[in-house]
Image 1 (cartoon, one colour):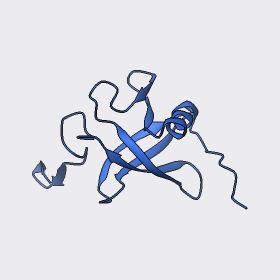
Image 2 (cartoon, rainbow, N blue to C red):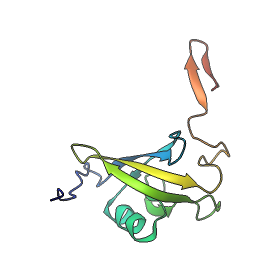
Image 3 (cartoon, rainbow, N blue to C red):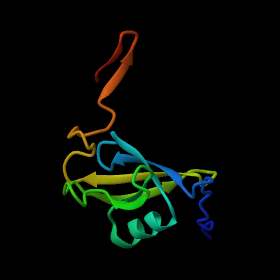
Image 4 (spheres, rainbow, N blue to C red):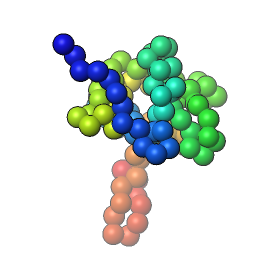
Length: 113
C-alpha cells in the first residue's frame, strides 16, 4: 500500500520543486509549487508553478512556448520537496539558456559553466 501524498507546505503554502531533464538528468530549474500548481501539473502533465514575484499560478511555457512535459514526480522523505522529471520544449531558463544553472561560482565571480 502506498503512503498518502501529504505535502508539507511552508508558511507561504509552497514546496520547492527541483526540475531535471527526464532523459539526461541535467538540472533545469528550481521553482515553487502550491497545492493548485501540484494539482494542475498532475491533471495536465505540464509543469505549473507558483510565481512568488507575481503572486500567481504560472504554467511554464504559457508565454514562451517552452513547456515542461512532466514524466515523473518524486517526493522526498519529508514531503517538503518535489523532484520533477520533465522533457522540455525548448530552453528551460527565461534567459534562453537550456538550464537556469549555466554559471559556475569561481573565486573571481560567476563564469560560464
